Length: 226
Image 1 (tube, rainbow, N blue to C red):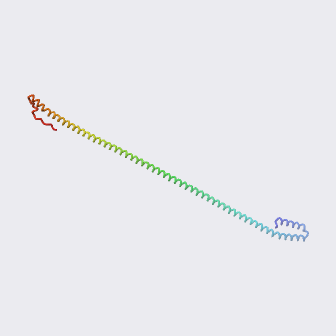
Image 2: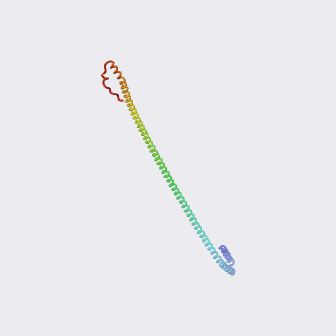
Image 3: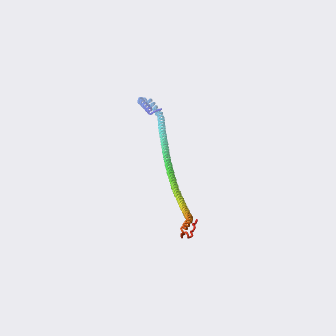
């Protein structure tokens, strides 16, 4: 391949030869012809080198452009992937936070429900205990009242029985006393009558013996009642 340096060296060499051989016409003509031939040979080589250089530059530019485009595409792809990853990460974090919030809300609701159930159960238990205590108190009061009533009835019955016994005893005592008095009176009257009856003949005898009859003996005497 011919380069610019090589061509310039060749041209200088031909020029020197021309000046050295200027007095020789043939040499000059030959040199001119050689220079023309060299220039004719160099021109296609220079054109070829120029074309090669242009093609190489174009290829280089194309490669640079391709590399830049590829790098840009890579950068875009990397940025898109990073953005996608970021979006996915953000969405995952948001979903996790939402899940945590939902779980916390559910836990709070469950705790509130348990608290309400416990409060209701405690209130129901207290109510049941209060009702049972009130019922037991009422039962105890009713039992005490029944016991008092039973005691009062027993006392009343005892008093009635005592009063009845007292009345019976008094009546019996009065009847006994009356019977005793009647019997005693009857016995006394009988004894008086018997004594009078027994003493009448003696009185009559004594009076007769004395020669006079008392007036009391002359009056008929009533017989005592049996």
